[in-house]
Image (cartoon, rainbow, N blue to C red):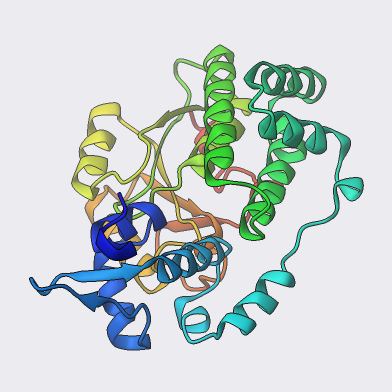
Length: 300
């Protein structure tokens, strides 16, 4: 809802940018942006220009860039940075990706399903994830950053993909006495597509996975490990997660979970993380995905 005189409340800005109000206040103190005005009650109010800039910054954060680099930039510098991230032209894109993008722009859910089905039947789960889903999501991210794809279109694709993958994952037979992996993100991490793709890769290897979804409190992960008798826990971090907190949070989780339960981690947020806590393994990308410890399968 637009506030009086074209100003937005901090709650509206938080909702429409996905940037938490505590983060907005920290940026205000540390970087001098955003620069809200105060109403008669002392409440922060943000202009539409600031809202739009914050939305651009959020898109760049999702690409793994850091607030310290982005917040001090002028509008011209931000424009140049975005220009350097322009996606390939449609002629350069894979024909399948181009066709799916066209279906997304047309809001044609049936056509998206048909295209997914065709690629899945041709490539199988692993090939579908690596050769269709990964390049598709990379392209969608680039188009979103450059303003060529709307947020609702990205969400539309995500929902179609989530439904499709969950349906196909459920069809893959799993060994009743095989290993079990719990998947989750920690509080503050809303991005869950990475979890779903890991679940798909595990399923293609015949391994059972329980996807708890996003923003699961640590104590609930610990309880789930006990209740489901999990052999491993997989935690993903996107580039938007607070990088400085990742190692500490993994260390805390490692201390809470029994030593014989392995912890795996992946995602853009941990790509640069060199020193992991003892008992935590990293998979760098889905392209090179393999079970961090194959003995989970061989010993089951």
